[in-house]
Image (cartoon, rainbow, N blue to C red; front, side, top):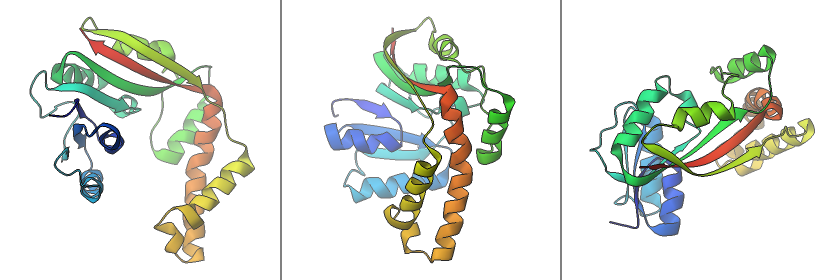
Length: 215
């Protein structure tokens, strides 16, 4: 057993590279799990980083299993998020830590912004997701706030956003940079259609990074 055992997917590789920690990762997407396994194997971590398709509301782990659990900006996407949190607390050891980040609205936003985000990504954020909302959500009797950092977000200038996306598609992404220019342009236009409303939303948002410890 390494320094700690945790449950998450994407950041498990980063933690492994720094601490050689083991991790159990879950996702509802078989493609995401397959990709995670391939990346773990590529870095020689297949014995330490294990991934499986699973539901966050029904975790396939015993009580008091993990020392750390990472939930990076994912609770908002879970419809039964209170049930998911109860499962997280169940599998977390006493004095274990939930490491979570969530976007919140730091000022009132209109339905036009919300609708634009929904049209771009097929998910409708709730304008009532304020910082207080997330405090109240995690403030169970068996959890205590251990640390917190909040950051205000702001939109990127439009031309800068376009330049960054074009560079990503044409140069940085190992898949799209090999494509025909016409197909690259199609990827670029699609990315831009997604990123523009998300970028506009940032003027109303903050992101909170919180550590909640199990009592």
